[in-house]
Image 1 (cartoon, rainbow, N blue to C red):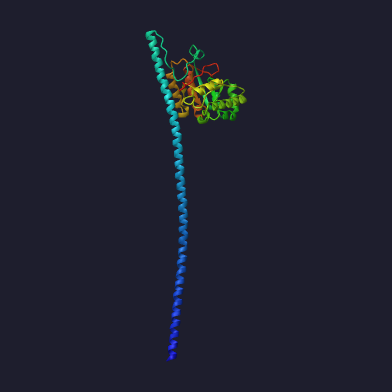
Image 2 (image 1 turned 180 degrees about the vertical axis):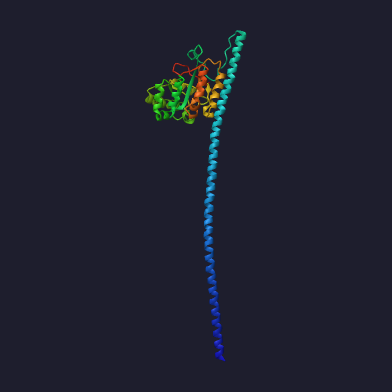
Length: 336
C-alpha cells in the first residue's frame, strides 16, 4: 500500500511538471509569434512617421517660400506704386501750369498787358539759346537712361534712319560692360552723359560727397572708354525729391550740368506700345511750350521695339531730333 501511494505521488508530480512544460512552451511560442507579428507593424509605423515628417517639412517649406514670394511681390508693387504716384503728381502739376500759362496768354491778348506766369511746368525757365528754331521745324531732345546695353547699336541705327540725334545718360558699370556701344555713340554724334555708379537712391543720395564721388568716377570711366570728358548728367530717378538745395549747389560747384525732363514716356511702367501714346498725349499738352522738349526714355528692349512708331509720329509732326549740348540751360525740376 505504501509503495502504491509513493508511486502515485511521483506520477502526480510528473504530470504536474509535464503540464508546466506544456504551458511554458505554449507561452513562449505565443510570445515569439506576437513579437514577429508586431515587428513589421512597428517598422511600417516608423516609416509612416518618417514620411509624414518629411511631408510636413516639405509643406512648411512650401508655405514659407510662398510667403516670401508674396512679400517680395508686395514690396516691389509698393515701390512701383510710390514711383507712379510721384510721377503722376508731376504730370498733374505740369498740366495745371500749362493751363495757367494759356490763361495768362489769353489775358495778355485781351488786355494788352503782359502777364508773367508764376511757373512754367516743373522745369527752370529756358534762356535764349533754348528757344525753338523758327520755321516749320520744332526740336525735341530724346534722352535714354540706364545704358548702354547689348542693343544700343540698334537704337543708334534707328535714330540714324530718321536723321535724329539723342543723349545717353549711362551707368558706370554698363559703360565698362559695353565699351563698343559707347564708342559708337560718340562716333555717330550722340551726346554721352553720366547717370551714377550705383543707381541706388540710398547710396547715391547719402550725402553731397557720395553724389560727387559717383559722378566723378562715372565721368572718369566715360573719359577712359570714349575719350569724352562729359559733365552732362542726370541723377537716378530725377532730381526730385532727393536733390536738396545743398546737393544742387555741390553739383553746380563741381561743374556738372544736371538735366531732368518735361515728358516722361513711362516706358519703365507700360513696357509696351502704350508709352508712345503717353508721349503724344504729353506733347499735345506742351503745344505752346517755347523751351526745349526733353523726353525721358530708357534703354529697354520694349522701348526699342516701339521706337519706330514714336519716331514716325515725331517726324510727321515736323520735329527735329537733336542731342543736348553743354551750351544749353538744363531743364530741371523745381527744388523742394
